[in-house]
Image 1 (spheres, rainbow, N blue to C red):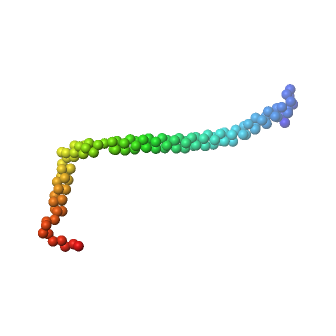
Image 2 (spheres, rainbow, N blue to C red):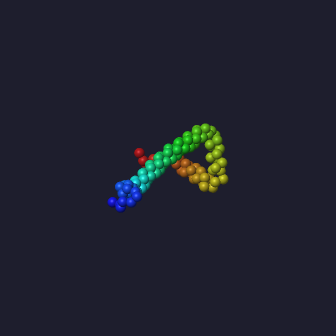
Image 3 (tube, rainbow, N blue to C red):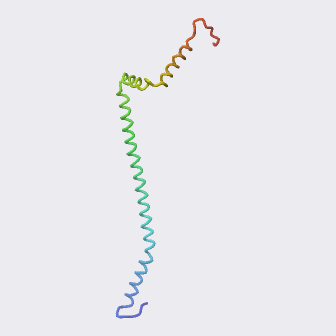
Length: 118
């Protein structure tokens, strides 16, 4: 107990004890607040990730729908013309076309050729 002064010693003891209690509880309260903030920020980051995935899926769906619409709206003649323009003047494509022609010529059987397989 505090000494008796012009202020009552019981009041001085009560104030001292409440100050000691505040100082003793401060580390626990600050750690509790830290854990609450950590849990809240982790939860918010997970919610943000889910929201971003949903937005990405919406955008992907829109892109695929637009691409399919473009593919279905193209005319067949336009596709043929575009393919011809891409492949004309291309030496590899011309070599492949001539090789395909030669292979189809070899695949044709002569009329008097005997067949040995069943």
